[in-house]
Structure formats: C-alpha cells, structure tokens
Length: 169
Image 1 (cartoon, rainbow, N blue to C red):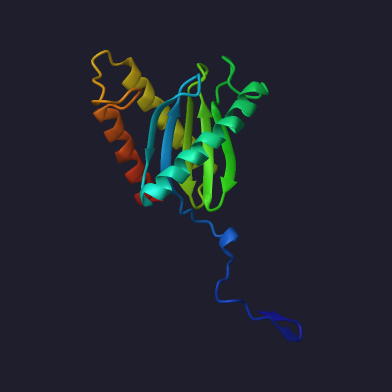
Image 2 (cartoon, one colour; image 1 turned 90 degrees about the vertical axis):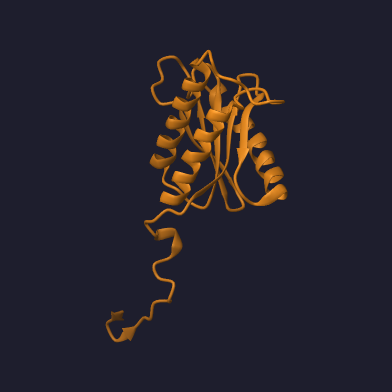
C-alpha cells in the first residue's frame, strides 16, 4: 500500500483474525440446569475425558454469572420477551452463553472459537423449544440409570443440532 513517498507492506495474515467476518465456533458442551441449579442435562462433545471435566467445570462456574444476571432484575421477568442472557464469560478459547426461562430453567452452551450473538441466540431458542417438547410429552421414557432430561430422543436431537451447528459454522 502506498502512502505518499512511503510504501507499507501488509503482513501475510491480513486482515487480522479479529476483523474477519466469518465465525468458526464449535459447540463443545450443552447444559440444561434446573431452577435449583441441579443439572437436568449435560453433554460434552469432543476432547476426551480431560476436556469433559474442564467443560463441566466451566458450565458450573457460569451458573454464578447466570444467577447474578437473573437476580439483578435485568432479565427473566414474565413480561420479558428476550430470555437470552448473552455471553456469560470467556475463558481460554471458550465462550459461554446463557439463556434463562421465566421458570428459572437455565441453558448454557460452551463454544470453542468465535460466533455471532444472533446465531447463538437462535440456537438457544431452538434448545428451549426442544426442552418444552421433551418435558411436555407424558410418554417420554428416561434412559436407564439417568435422571432429568436424559431421554434417548432428547439426547439424539441435541446431538443432531450440535452436529448441524458445528458443520455449518
């Protein structure tokens, strides 16, 4: 690039990653947490046993931020139309996003990489819809030795949605 009598050579990595318009987030964990902060559903994707423990820890610590946002009165009132809490926090290369219903059911998704807020908001709304379908079905059968939302159909639908998200973004 020429600036008067001076030439400026751009680095080979131009534009900087922070300015890039594409998003490359990958979902690594999905959690549905009850109103008493009991895990109803928690599934991790990839990175082996050590990664699972790390993801569980990050989900657990994000609940403090969810509670802070909920108790501050900014979110989760019966008149609130948007239940999306936004980005809860970032740790290492992971971003945690939250969503809380009027009945205090919390949804947390852990994403590795970057992602647009609107995409996450939409994905969490879909997760909420899946939750409603699963809990409204009186014929839902729980998986053996599991409690909460660990049904084969709910788990399968979550896995499919995560794969679609990870392949598309």
